Image (cartoon, rainbow, N blue to C red; front, side, top):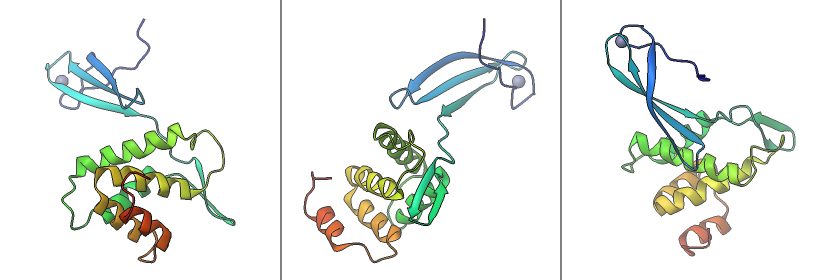
Length: 159
Ligand SMILES: [Zn+2]
C-alpha cells in the first residue's frame, strides 16, 4: 500500500512515481526523486517540518508566530557584503531550526524570541564569526549588548 500521494509531472502534468528518497538533517528532512510515467523526466522534492506559526514572544505584550521567512530575511540582510550563497542561507536556516528543535523551542506554546537569536548566533558563529557579528548588528539595530560582542570576539568556543 502506498501512503504518500504522487505528484503530477511539472512538465507534462501526468502522474509520476517516486524512485528514490532519503532523509537528511537528523531525519527532519526528506528528499525524494520522482520520475514521470509519461515523459520519463525526473525532478526532486524536499520535505521539511513547517514550524510556521509556533508562538514566539517578542516582548511581554507582543507575541508573534515563528516565521522561517523572517529568519531567512535577517540572515540575508546580515550576509550583505559577505559571499554567502543563497543555498547556504537555507542550509544555515535548517541548522538553526534543527538546534531550536533540539532545545524544545517548537514543543511549547510560548517561547522567547531571544532563543531564536541566541541559537542563530551560535550556528552562524560556527560557520563564520564575521557573519555572526553582522547578524548581531542587524538584530539589535547596530546597538548590540556589549557583553554579547565581547563573547563573540573573545571566546571562540564558548558559544
Ligand atoms: Zn511528464
